[in-house]
Image (cartoon, rainbow, N blue to C red; front, side, top):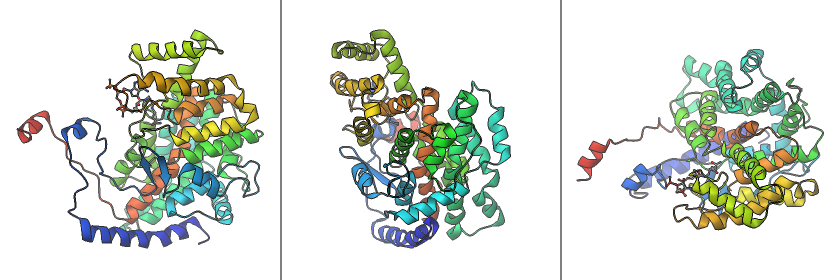
Length: 440
Ligand code: AMX
């Protein structure tokens, strides 16, 4: 296949066959019991969703079609493989893997980058909508609203109105998904320009650059190979974290009503904006700032330990630590740490050093609480330090960067859900009275 759409078209019939075979053999096979604890405990552990891109293992962390982050770093075409400045894997390569299950060639990735660049500019009505937002409106609210507004030109919506056949749903869903992935950087950059005055907000998109090369340019960091390469890694590894997390599950749920990809992903962004989910990367920096003001930049291990204890005692969470599924340090945290250690200009930055220092102390302190199931750092513990070190000090923009990334996983799942004919989601809920009666 020379294009991603051709590769997806080749992958779909094989998936349809495998799903058919599973249904024929196992429609009534149990995947586990539902306990009251699951119902009251945020549905933890219940296997109730089909999600093709990635699977999260509590001990080993995320695997994208079976490939760990280190595997991806070795195998996926990188900036270097495409002759670009930098060396990190490209989010386009991750997108190809997530959608098809295959590692693309450098030429395939180059073609995809060019396609994304050709679709990256915003229609002027969306620019006007973004420009009309008050600067004080949180960037995530602006991001979600502008993303929803892009559905004005949805191919899926138009095709549905014309009466497209169910078997063909995946094709305009794919077209919208690529269109949205192409435009998210420009939406984000315009918000950054309006709120923080950096970059030029003009969407000068170079057809010979990759998605993140252009994103970095639009944000005003294009001259920094380090920042551009950091953003590539950041956006590749935040792309997908199986289906149950709030943003991914939201896009799946909303998409199941046949809302188009723009609406579905806008809803996902609103979930990502919560402090227990994507906003944690902003919260981490707020927490670090508070700590630096309180105990200084050269704090001792004992001072940090005490600060962590005080945070817990005050009833707040330590942002960037813990996870609903993971029970080991997050390999995404490890990948960012590796980047920091290998990058001389970052290694000695005070905040980067402090992030590494806290990551050794916090697991001990959080581990003493017998209720916290995972005392280890998650990806959000590390991600803001790199952005800050490269000059992006505006913390309320960090979750927007996460939001540019999460589309790489959420949107392919919508394509697959339509290709596999998955139905509208409609789980059963229970009232206390209904539970009392059925559990008597
Ligand atoms: N600091 C303090 N308390 C924590 C904690 C932390 N980092 N992590 C968990 N706990 C507490 C919970 O609040 C809960 O307390 P409660 O019983 O009084 O309500 C108890 O420990 C048990 O929680 P858990 O089963 O270990 O975790 P969970 O599945 O309920 O929640 C998560 C997972 C991520 C929301 C939680 O660990 C947390 O709030 N972490 C801090 C916020 C954060 O970093 N979020 C980002 C996660 C990754 C992402 O989505 N980007």
